[in-house]
Length: 95
Figure (tube, rainbow, N blue to C red):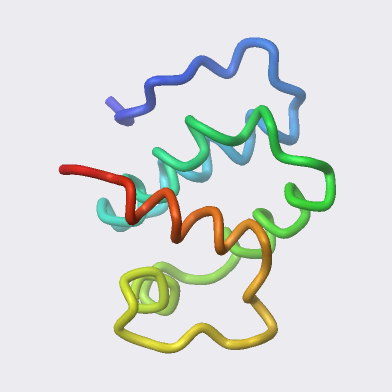
């Protein structure tokens, strides 16, 4: 079980792939953070935001998690609108 609450039905192939990648990161914490974000937002992201999200998903979990949790500063080259949406959605999460 992935944890996803969203069906990939109605999504184009690129968004379906990103939804899958969001829930299959390798580190459960990142699965929950990025998977929950993708469940909520993947259908509404613009093409530019999809490009940004793909770039963010290429960052290894061991580097990305400390940035998302605030343990490490976010480098300027990855600070983007989608990252800010991920951070906002994480703050709104309750586990």
